Length: 183
Length: 126
Image (cartoon, rainbow over the protein chains, first blue to last red):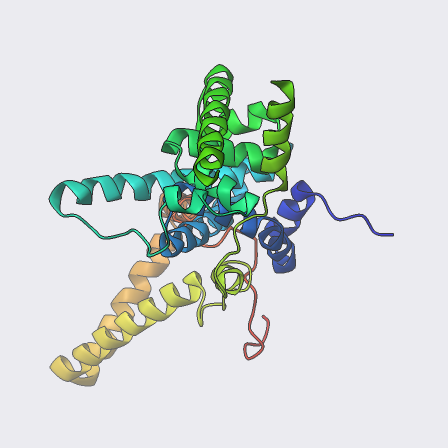
């Protein structure tokens, strides 16, 4: 049975001119990167653009990837910074005009009333402040790898743990309120 | 309290990822790993540009001064080039310029050096 090639090997193969190696990396991480972008930006089109931008930047600067480091952390960091740029642009435009970016889906409060647990949890995550939402999303994607999360966000590990603790507390409160509303 | 902590973490890790829009993966691959190779490489474009410029210049010479001016100019260029290329300092500057161009190409966002692009079927490999 052939083991899946490691990310570092795929990067090395890409740099030697093998396009299929990078394609494997794309297939491995495109959903996770899109998930991070969507959770951060709350907009399907912007999340798609940010995801494409992240992979394009990664491909162009693949030579700067440090062997031995984690590709997932690297691509998530690129994606996160792409999302931050878009959020900053959005805030700049918001001071000049009011772009109608909200999609027509019901708001987080309405969604929280839905019976489906996944829907309720997503709605609760959506209701978190952006910095907590991102750290919870990365926690979901990378598990308890706090160092990786801190590396992606460019924050000290202590701050990441604090944000994660507060995010979970808020999630529990939101989910508890949703249950009370249902009953 | 530990139970609620564990339950929340379990629920988080069980949460499925957002489904990306249709065509996202294909568009990423077409922009990166499987992007079509350009019709001409950077060096080929530079050479074509230089040859084109020389050609236009020679045509203008012919139009202005006829054949004698054309050949006189060619002869002058040839002798100047021969003198310059036999000069060690000129060769050193050319080498420095070429090395700088090569080094800069690493930072311009063009395709990674030595990583050949995916060649489409219609283009014969060199």
